[in-house]
Length: 67
Image (tube, rainbow, N blue to C red):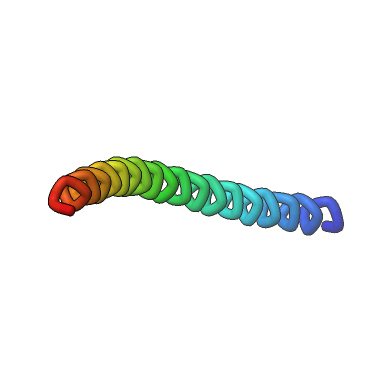
């Protein structure tokens, strides 16, 4: 009887651990996907920032020519 109760408890705990691991793995995957998206957005913003800096520098050069 005690062995049976322990066996049932062990099986229940094992299922709980498997669920926790599955949920943790899913959360890790979600975070990896989010990180990949944010990294892509960051690269886009860096390029945009570089383009704007170039445009600003060009406007400055044009303004200097006018003076």
